[in-house]
Image (cartoon, rainbow, N blue to C red; front, side, top):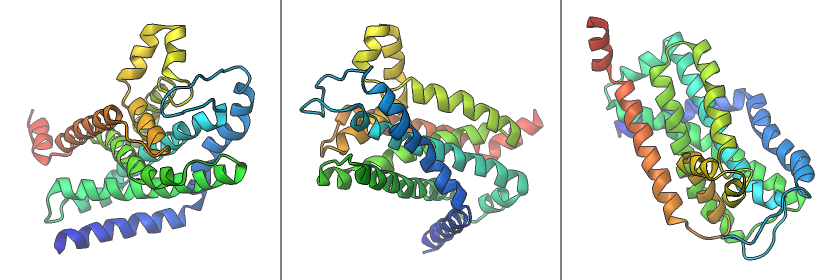
Length: 262
């Protein structure tokens, strides 16, 4: 019961922060909507798409980038949540949270889950706007996209948590975000198919395959069409475990005591 009380308290705190920061919700939707309404219209004629799984017919570029834009929301929100962790640590509230008589991994997981649930709300709003725009998907895909976005959001949130564990100052973290977000986003299958990347450079395609964000996007892409991509699921879960493990190591108080002694 104590664990559930702590989880509920952290979820409630994140919900209040989300409600009070309505501009954050709007800003999270502006980026993907600009790509959907503006850039996709320009790229539609320049980028031809072949029939590749999970698609069974030719599709427009707007339909192709919808999963990638969902991934964009999860990526940016994961980094935003990590930025709030650094801020809370500077203000002292994060230090107070981690002193609670509960396992540290549970407290960090609760924080990670709260941020991911906020991301799911933003993804749902984006998909609703896309449907109004005329980009409709199979109804079962919307249901399967919920766990897919949850897993992808946890993985990207764990990445932000890992970065926040090793970056101590707010100014430094804001700068590092740009070196993480943009390479991960553009070196992925969010905007271009991997076979298109291979035409430009096989090495570039290989870099995209090494990018965990690529597998998160593909997991969402297949889920939106009612399918499960086992390779994408496996690589996303593996990245989640690695990022979460490094984050737990970074937030280990014993490690901080050893570094101060050194």
